[in-house]
Length: 271
Ligand SMILES: NC(=O)c1ccc[n+]([C@@H]2O[C@H](COP(=O)([O-])OP(=O)(O)OC[C@H]3O[C@@H](n4cnc5c(N)ncnc54)[C@H](OP(=O)(O)O)[C@@H]3O)[C@@H](O)[C@H]2O)c1
Image (cartoon, rainbow, N blue to C red):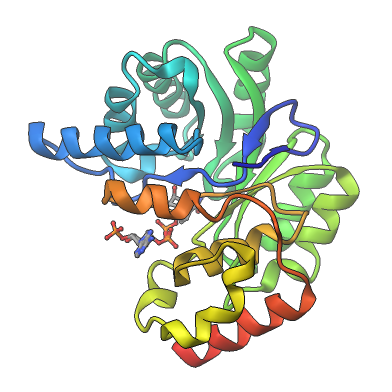
């Protein structure tokens, strides 16, 4: 698995990590054991970056359980998501409890009340409980505000959606992130399954075999990660074996412009 510096955040991350939205929002022994199996496979494959949020129901708690006894092997990214400063502090207290008293990347989710949450997070960073601070948004209309936050100098990473059918960030967000040397975490690599509804036939994937691509999800992940401005993609899965498959896209050779264009064309035909 290739590792990249997450911009100037001070963190080094594997290029493939894992999200937990909906897939880890589960309760009960069997579902929690399954989440543990997903995390075990991720760690085995070197996909050691895990993203969560208090917005994702049980996910932060279930990720914490799944990391029991192996927390040191993980890079945890989570979020604060509330208009209230006090509720934000409670969310952070809970998360620090789940993750052994520290979180590597703390993000302001959807830019909600970002100014005040950044005050809290900066204090925690000064205390050594948070390594780096970021901000996220998933919708293009919010990207102007996201760029304003990026320019404040108060964050060192962003999390944005990017895949062959959601390319809004190419216009201004990715160029600005590169200019400012910010880390870029890529959410929704499969467009929330939208890109997985119709899988291209093997014959269409054959030209990508020299790049180590065996499956369509791997082609999509490699499409993202072949842009060096992107540092880690975080596909979510509830199936342990898919974590191994996804991690398989995390190394060179990377696509050139022609292969990226080819995958884009395949993706347009799949939606
Ligand atoms: N900050 C924000 O605003 C924000 C917004 C959205 C998402 N996110 C983060 O980004 C993460 C990823 O985004 P996402 O969960 O929306 O969507 P996604 O990763 O694009 O797609 C996830 C879906 O893909 C399926 N999948 C994963 N690997 C697969 C494979 N190899 N083969 C076939 N199917 C596969 C999973 O189903 P199975 O479970 O059946 O494998 C899952 O339902 C989230 O979990 C979350 O951590 C952040």
